[in-house]
Length: 243
Image 1 (tube, helix red, strand yellow):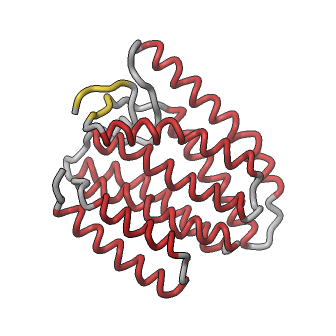
Image 2: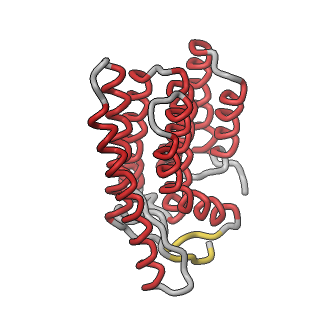
Image 3: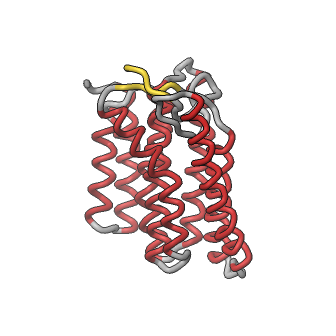
């Protein structure tokens, strides 16, 4: 592994923005440490598109801080920006001719980090039930752990676009972000929260059922899903190949 120019430049930019945010919000030291840890790890990640993806790992910090402190209006903005980066990174990869298996493996890791921080923070703040936070974490746990292990061992997944991964991620972002926005505007969010308590578990089960079928179709491989990155269509992974 070696330092990447795009990673170092993006890390410095993110840190400057993060330091400005720190000076205003004064978050706990462990959140500050997280920002610097992501910047160090990101400096070894090549490609501008992958740096856009890493933005969600940085955004996990304000997401957790705002969720636990009840600043739901600001939290809704953070969720919206995170969703935007999820759409933009694939476009950047295609425009710069940088689609890669690395990006596909990085996506589920970063999604898991962001959604985990968001939902744990909301559960701690008492804005969503703890069981719902655990369901969301379960949705991203396998892809995040598997993607992280692949990257750590220098392996790259074989990528394939799947609908359930995209749909479940979109539903979770819209429903959880909507609950935050409604409560920030002092509107009744009970209907949206009730919908989230039904839809998110169903979407999570559907995702894992799809993963199971994908694994059965490709014996001896690991299946996963998420947002599109590789060749403008694929994401996460349905098999493992040496990097």
